Amino acid sequence: MTVTYTARVANARFGGFSQLLLLWRGSIYKLLWRELVCFLGLYMALSAAYRFVLTEGQKRYFEKLVIYCDQYASLIPVSFVLGPHAPNRVIPCGQGDNLPMCPEHRPCVSTSILTSQSHIPGFYVTLVVHRWWNQYLCMPLPDALMCVVAGTVHGRDERGRLYRRTLMRYAGLSAVLILRSVSTAVFKRFPTIDHVVEAGFMTREERKKFENLNSSYNKYWVPCVWFSNLAAQARREGRIRDNSALKLLLEELTVFRGKCGMLFHYDWISVPLVYTQVVTIAVYSYFLACLIGRQFLDPAQGYEGHNLDLCVPIFTLLQFFFYAGWLKVAEQLINPFGEDDDDFETNFLIDRNFQVSMLAVDEMYDDLAMLEKDLYWDATEARAPYTAATAFLRQQPSFQGSTFDITLAKEDMQFQRLDGVDGPLGEAHGDFLQRLLPVGAGMGAGGLLGRRLSLMRRKNSCVSETSTAASCTCAGAPDGTAPECGCGDPLLDSGLREPEPELPAGPELPVPGPAAEPFTTVPMPAPRGPAPPWLPSPIGEEEESLA
Image 1: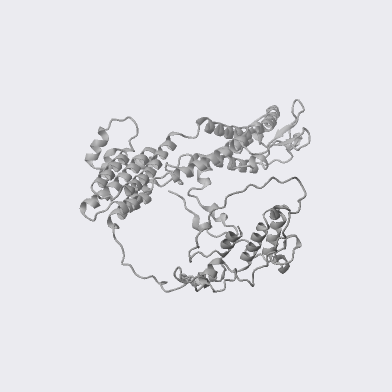
Image 2: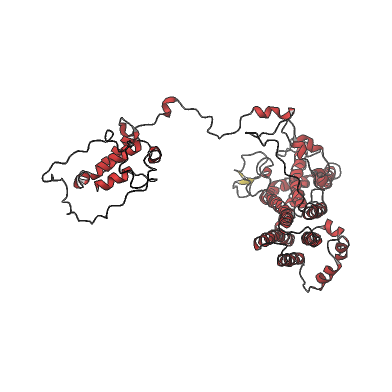
């Protein structure tokens, strides 16, 4: 029943949607032609009566009625009920063509065809379309459940096969029971439980248990309970090998059961009736007023805005086509489980789901092809071939990122020095840290912090400790056999070390600023033993000696 035109609009081209205007099945013409013919017939009947039946006095009275209906028809909130975000155009009295004068001479709110009344789709139709798509997402599909059943319920014997097929039959039975409760097409196919039994979804013994269950509510959930009980029995018999597999199976059943429940709730809770009534009354009353208010009057009478006398109201018909068409769209989509052209093909889904679920858990169970090396086994870069029609795609570069093609000038890619200091960035970084310290902080400790910063700079500028340890030939010597390492560690080489300044003996120079608190003697920990050969740390050893 679904009208599919996806292949017709696969590629955008000139007049691509124009071809769809000629389709009849599922079209707006098929839905609306009766209402359109009825509206046009009533309009032409009134027009003929005005021209050929009424007397001159009656014509003058009818003309006043036409002006009155045309003046106040815009007060019907068609744009509000179909499009709440439609802006109204406020025009002062006497500053627009064909705009009526209010009795109190206040600004009139005019809603024209090409402004606020064209702001559709409206809220009501949008609500119905979202509801329509969400109902399709709640259709109970067994694909995930059948994969879990095939992977967790084991056994190639007849009982294992019976377990798997019965589990999937229970899932299919639950879907049939809920669909025959909400879909007229499925109910016509399975009008009674006897038809469900004859179709093979339920056995006669199961039917007795189903009917003996005392419950006044819809019992579509009963097969899901049977599924759970049968899965627990398969676990006790070892067909399901662990509790994790049973948990996964029941989780998938819960998802399947939840979709069945949502279909039931969508069928139970509709769009509020008052909302649908307001939209319908607004649209129909508006065009009932347009039947009179949009009549063409005699130009000889000199009425404002009636300078042209036509027989067919072209733009009024277009307006009716758009507004009544959107109302028809909502009418068709509000319940997609009927028998309209674009309603869901529920019977097709029942047939498809039942067949593929049985194939997956029975014929395809443990049926694997022989493992073979693929075509790209020895290829460093696996790439599938292209046909002649798609060979041009191989020339297109792969997408690397939106900034991949950005180019910068050479001078813009140079790192900037901190505060304009010349020299390596590591030294500038160390000097920057040293400048942040107070003046007397390093002096009070005997220059210890300054020497540590010097060691950190040398450590950052030389090779890493890991590479140094790997190049040392004395690292593998047993303990006690190599009293000293003579490999010439670059970090401890005397030629690379900076000379440490000797502090002059005598009293310390006074430091300007507030009086410093007296130092507190802190007991130092005992010296640590020698580091293991696989963890050299020359910087740490020198810091210990400095401490």
